[in-house]
Length: 211
Image (cartoon, rainbow, N blue to C red; front, top):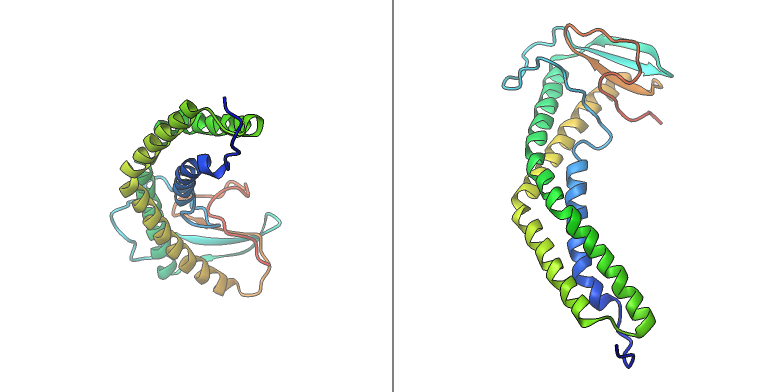
């Protein structure tokens, strides 16, 4: 192995970095569905209709796990709540192909990271890496890029749906916070028709703590 040249590390990492950033971007798209809002699925929800009545839906506001306010939800709030659930159910469907992508990429990305580490060590020790290792890394990087590209429509669909969910969640949260006003609270949750809270603070729909 020659030691006559001191190769810049970025020369060997650039392709891998682009690929890994694409994967990270996909993961962020998947995990950014609703920001700080989490919606609990309600059994028996009819997902093909939007309720025209607020009958049976209630809002509970808690502070230190104690109920400080409870009221019936307005028609507008119920409609947004059901829209949010429907959008998240669709998101679950859209994420299925990305699970397959993750499975296909898992071993390849680990190997790519290992190759990058080996190249870095070789550059530090000898001034340049083995040409065969560089070629192998480039080939694997192209393979990973091709897989990500093949799932691009699914990645775009998940990202678009995540933005839609975030918009609905923001509207819903805004309505609830307007009603609460300056009252201090930790959590807000929805109680669906026929459901009774168990007393657990981890039940229902939650929003970020008030400042």
